[in-house]
Image (cartoon, rainbow, N blue to C red; front, side, top):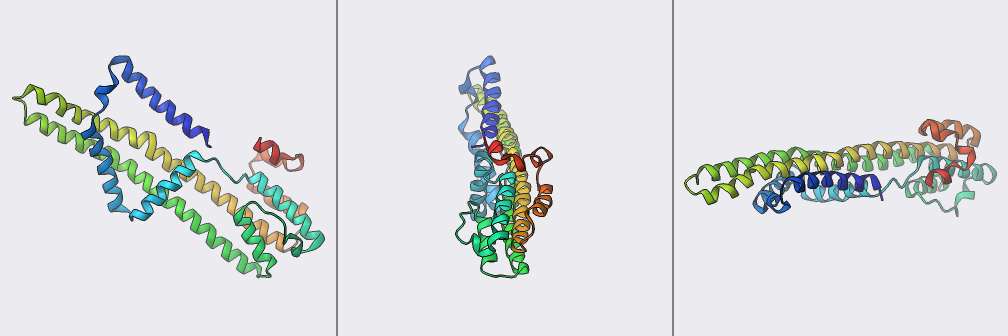
Length: 261
């Protein structure tokens, strides 16, 4: 699990709740009509902008990006590539036929190379798969950013609804309070949904998309060099560009295990 997301949500909600409880009771900030206006209106606008299937897929992708840590460590991928390269240098591509490769994308590329496909076909196939995955992530980011744009707008719509209700019932003092609550709370709900959930989720997806692009490019280069039976020392030099500087020195030190721990 990505603990940073959980900490951020708890901290953000905690600060808001603490500020509320210091000055008043929590229940006065709970307003069902205002919540329905913001959430229902935001979802409706999102369904208008994007296909429903794409929206639900984006929710799944966003939750995975937010709460599941990176499964692909670039240092581990480099170590794996070097290990496969050494096996290939001594036994050819067939030496990898029964090797267990935990990364599905990597496994697919190696299998194509074992099957004798040309480097051009391998590169084209893997690049197409990489672009599809990245498109899915980018679409998810656009959807969450659209939610972040719509939620405050519907908060303002709820405010206008509450003000109209209040102004139309000035003669009834009992109706002024609930109408004013709708007017104020919908703006609060819209701001919280946008700035604590939707927009941070979009930014996290954007960050994960860039890391996905780096990892997949690393794997594509690795597969092609392994297929060409490039010297492992040369391969190491080629793949170091995909690693942060602090990880490059760990390649010869069992760094993948240390980094994971």
